[in-house]
Length: 267
Ligand code: ADP
Image (cartoon, rainbow, N blue to C red; front, side, top):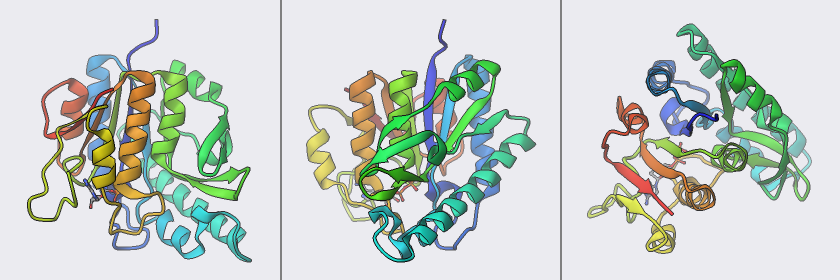
């Protein structure tokens, strides 16, 4: 029988210092991995973890406009440098897991997916299923992909989780970011309120009210997160959570089914 499965995204703004090129926060990564591993073992559930790139790939991606594809003379170089920065952070992430004896196993989306205009159109997941049966915890991350329309693209972590949700049927999907959830406007503006539930009744209005991000981000910020989360929830019937992963135990509590301040996303 298939165990319950949870897809968890840890934002680049949580696990890196977004103001400094290639500065990871290993202590935050380790804390979050402990929370996830502890809860998944207590509950006996499977998890697939995805992490964002933050200040590792986004700065170079932005410089070479990798999100637009092979658009200039040095686009190939830019895409390779971006991919290499994304891998560097993934390597730090995986080592943090190994150091606490967590069986995290990395899968590079550039190697198992094909995209069309930044949307994954094809991919191979048998190796991920097999790894999970062996007891590994798969880890994917925002990456550069080969794209049939624009040559190369940025595959956001949310897009990878959307693609995986079609193959793995999650019951919960959690996006951990650096704010308490989705606000009805810029969260730092006076009067902005946390939206505690998103569903078919308010999703369209909220998507148009949500901004992107002030940080360097080539994947569209909060608006894209909300759209892709709703797409996953709508297609799979999973419950979604957008929550603050910078606060200790928030991700653990959501996994454990305990109440937390966050945005819950339902069909
Ligand atoms: P991550 O690194 O977790 O993927 P991003 O930096 O891409 O996160 O997106 C999170 C940011 O989105 C928040 O720090 C916030 O500044 C910004 N944001 C813009 N509009 C909203 C909104 N309506 N609700 C929540 N966050 C928003």
